[in-house]
Length: 108
Image (tube, rainbow, N blue to C red):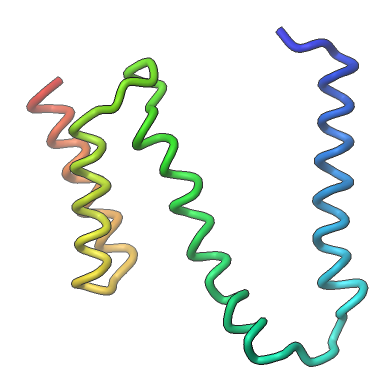
């Protein structure tokens, strides 16, 4: 159990960090034009967030108490392969979800 003071320190620090990150782009940059190389790199930010959120759930899932699960790895592999070849995010996620549900059903 985390101490209440420590919890509030973390919450306030995360709030300040989040505000600072947004202020850099909205407050300091505003509507000034950004260099082409920076806008190109910023386009990949949203694409990088989802794998960063999902990766710990695939490699160290809490459902298996942190043990790597072949079903989850297979589902992630199918999702990546489908995304690469089909180039459709929704269809890739659906295929990965089907593999995960089917694998959980068949292998427990």
